[in-house]
Amino acid sequence: MKKIIIAIDGFSSCGKSTMAKSLARNIGYLYFDSGAMYRAVALFCLEQRLIADGVIDVDTLRNRMSEIRITFEADPVTKNSVTILNGRNVEKEIRSLEVSRIVSQVAALDFVRTDMIAQQRSMGEAKGIVMDGRDIGTTVFPNAEMKIFVTASAEVRAQRRYDEIIARGDSANFDEILENVQLRDHIDQTREVSPLRKADDALLLDNSFMTREEQEQWLIERFNEIVKE
Ligand code: DC
Image 1: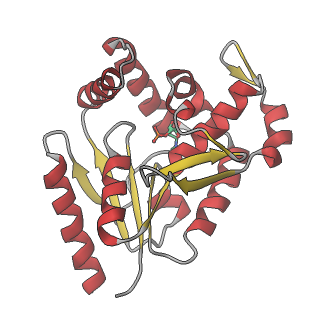
Image 2: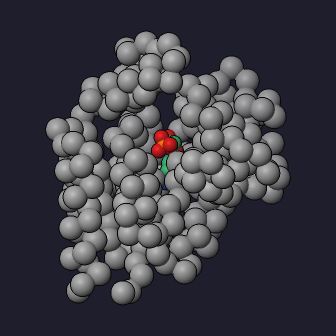
């Protein structure tokens, strides 16, 4: 069966990673989380104190980009793909609210995107991958054979993120999360470089009222149709 590239783009917190991961597992493809790469760069900025009062020291970051190495590895226990920043597993740290607050700013920098996009393209060289993000079907892999654009209302997405944080035993404020979701939507859609938009040939998936199983089924059906062609 021919191997293809599957690009899953969409708004933040609409379950893209969950669906991309399970699709990859079901069809035996590799999964890559491009958002995790921008998050790792944001974490680097925080840890190296390249950010003061919410403002990034852009010139220093540009000069230090070559110090940032991001890879993915399978966790030896859970087998889930985890993000490695300069040899260290940062999967938990990159999901913090601190990182979420600044990541859109980091992802809007042209030199950061150029660097990440080059790395993402090399991950897709052998095909047989599922990658999720914001610009995978439009910029990273404009020729991807299967493109999905996922959306859900901001309230539904904020509720999902809130439930996730509570489930891991942390405390959360729903209004603060909703505000963060809306702000990120705005930055992601209006930034100059590679703004979030649906590729003309992407299939639209609004999952506000879909169960995980329905979604999984829908994706497998689309995949089977495409590889059969
Ligand atoms: O999907 P996520 O929330 O982990 O993404 C983190 C941030 O990175 C978010 O602000 C959007 C940005 N991003 C991007 O600009 N391009 C991508 N391909 C993936 C994520």
